[in-house]
Amino acid sequence: MSSRVTVRFLWAFVAAAGLLSGSAVSAGPPSLEQAVVEVEFVGEVVFPTGTMVDGTEVGGLSSISYDRAKGTYQVLADDQGNRIDEDASADPVRFYTVDIDLDDGSLDDGDVQFVATTELLERRNKPFTPGGIDPEGLVVSGGSIFVSSEGVVRADPIVAPFIRRYNRTGRVTAELEIPDYYMPNGLDRGVRHNLAFESLNLTPDGRTLVTAAEGALAQDGPASTFDNGSLARILTYDVHRRKPLAEYVYEVEPWAEPSTIFGVNGIVEVLPIDNSGTMLVMERSFSVGGTLGGGTANVVSIYEVSTAGASDVLGVDALYEGGNPIDIVPVSKRLLFEFDDLGIPIDNIEGMTFGPALPDGRHSLVIVSDNNFSAAQFTQFVVLALAIEPVG
Image (tube, rainbow, N blue to C red):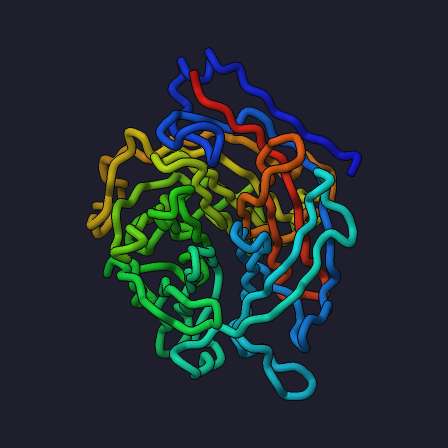
């Protein structure tokens, strides 16, 4: 692709300003503080809505994870199993195995191939009841796959969010403990509708699982609007014990554009770049009637975030008291990349993963969009090249 966006940072200034802490995926020992110093757009591939694979409609791709051992990707479809087609049948809850060819350092038409489909089961051989899951996050962990569901707050009865471990055949092998204050009552407690566990990823050493609520819990203050931001929680887990490890507060930005009909902004992906609290956080703003995002109203930004010095709020029931936020230190964040700068239509981007090293040694960041199975949208794969270096 001819479009190119590159950002560089003056290290002495950045370090003095205290904006960086953490280390990179593979650029030196994980204990060293590192940061992204360059971002370049290297290509996109688009699939139209209605593309079929194994008798299922490709769409709703809300999460992607690189399987380093196999050299392929697992991509989750945000399909609740209740989309009925003209034959009165529904596609299963599923993820796809995908090949993405980055050998020449670019992403071009023909480089993305869907090669297999795997159904996710509710338990043993039992499929999910239609509407019994809202699949959003997926990450490969050795021979296992972790999956997160936002739940369905507006269902009757409410479908609670979850994080589960699966084997490669789509069967559940474990359930992770979620703090009680995430559990929704549909009124004033727990995750808000469609603002729960959108993200899921691992630290490079594979020991810590990271997720986040897309926006504020009901008791944690207002959801994001055009006039105000929102306090979201980043939640980490000990992978082997499957129990919460720590939790931090992230300040979500206001909507990028106003709307009198509908708008939203929140965390759609969290991706650690080291084992000590430095991560990429992707925010996606959408406002009905908006004109940004190449005309789609999808305004997507990537921030570099550090938990160093941030308050650990694990076990804190509410971030608001008496209508005001409690005294906490949120994670630090700096803007790294804005997709609007590319000058191309941007779909509802929701997932990202580090892929293989590119021929020049930079890290590939592979990104995917959830088209909501809408004829007015499209499925989009985007690849960025990241240079990551030690700080100091």
